[in-house]
Image (tube, rainbow, N blue to C red; front, side, top):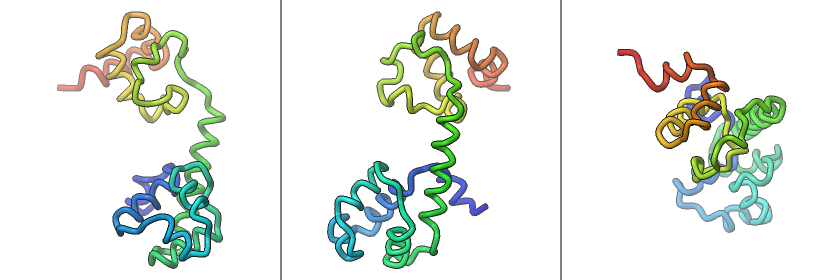
Amino acid sequence: MNTHLSIIKGVHPGFILNRELKARHLRKGPFAISLQEYPQTLVSITKGKRRMNINIALKIEKALGIEEGYFMILQVYHDIEETKKSQNKEHPDLTKLRRVLFWDTKMENINWVKQKNAVIKRIFERGNDIEKNEIISFYGIKTINDIIKPHE
């Protein structure tokens, strides 16, 4: 798989589009109108509130000189990630974790598997004994030790 694509795999295509428009100093409203699309549609996509569809993806890719199918591939990977999240509800007992520990995100949006390093470090830096014990029971002591005490 393309290295660039594997890095952004699972990210909503609208976020990538937003970054691309900023890099090219293109404003969303005029760009949307140039595609004969409603500006609200493009804004919703770039905020991750609306799916990318084939028609819009093809227009955007043509206008920006991006390989055909790029945004739809990203959409499929994002859909897969969202489906996996909904199927895999495994997470620690959130009632034992204070929301203040995750002030910068919603706890419901945390991918407890992919972001385990950050979660474990945060809990062990700022958490109380109840929170630490919950994380130990969720991830296991070996995983915790591998992350907290790096190999020398």
